[in-house]
Length: 172
Image (cartoon, rainbow, N blue to C red; front, side, top):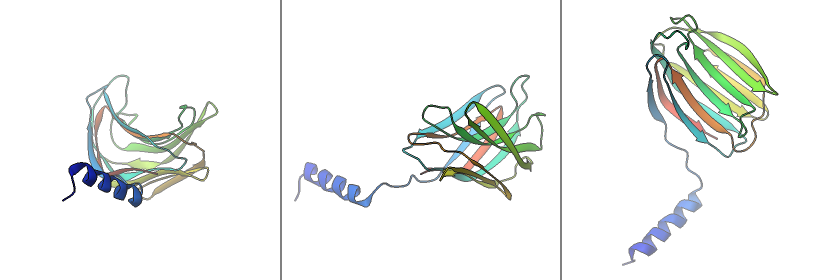
């Protein structure tokens, strides 16, 4: 019978042959009070990135300065280039605006994709590959030229409300 050290070495070498595993999808109940935020962030090797899942805006809080919202963001290692799929309630009530926002060379461009109501459960994808970002949420679509490069990060942030993420995946 092999000893524990040999068994662990065999398992490790077998796992290395299998290649990198994709992380399992997860749920994230991003529930924040007025003026508060919560973030999940992961650095990835790149240069291609993808965030996908389903999202629903369930509750909006009220704050003088901060509007309720959720962001899915892919950002370069030096933080100078980013693409975000944003769901915002600038009037502090539904419906919420859905926008694709890109920042590069110190300039931010915003592309309005549409609007959604509270408690709508919508599939989404934000992906950067081949010098292009593609954003999809429900039937809304947008794209723009952008390159993130290696060592960027993927994240999701919510503030001043309750946003539920289901089947959330941070992928390459």
